Structures are given as structure tokens and as C-alpha cells.
Image 1: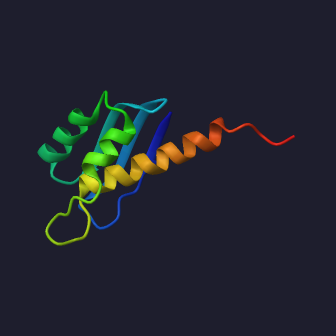
Image 2: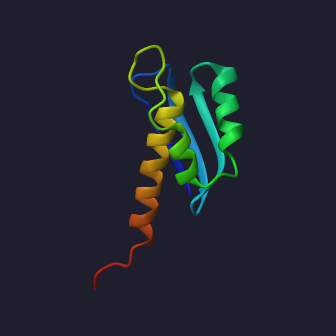
Length: 92
């Protein structure tokens, strides 16, 4: 499953996430501090989304109330929610 998320309040302008079930297989940031976003992306690849969310959610950058890692956590939450909706059986 591939998800595209538009971050808010940070320098990055887009986050693309590829997941296999609840496992993160690839993350690509557009914009932001390239070295940092590349590092975060590589660190979370192979992790369960919930574990990454627990580590990244709430990180603050320069008093913005959010950060690229925090936005990734929000994107992962949205991806999990959408994945659950897709897997839910339809009412007949």
C-alpha cells in the first residue's frame, strides 16, 4: 500500500510511504532537511508503523509544535486508518 501525505507546519512538502500491512517498507520525504529526513526514513524502514509512531509523535522543531518526524507519525496514523478501512468487510 502506498500513501502520500502533505505535511503541515514543516519544511518538507510531501511524504510518500510504502507499507506491507503494518510494516514500513519505504519512506520518501520531498523537501525539508535532506540529511535528517533521509536518516529518519532509513531508521523507520522495516519497523512496525505503531512502533515508529510511538517514537516520533510529538517531536518539536524550532517551536513549531511539530516536526518532520512528527508529521511522519501523523502520516503513518492516517495510513493505518485507511488500511483498516480497506480491509474492513463491507456491509451486505
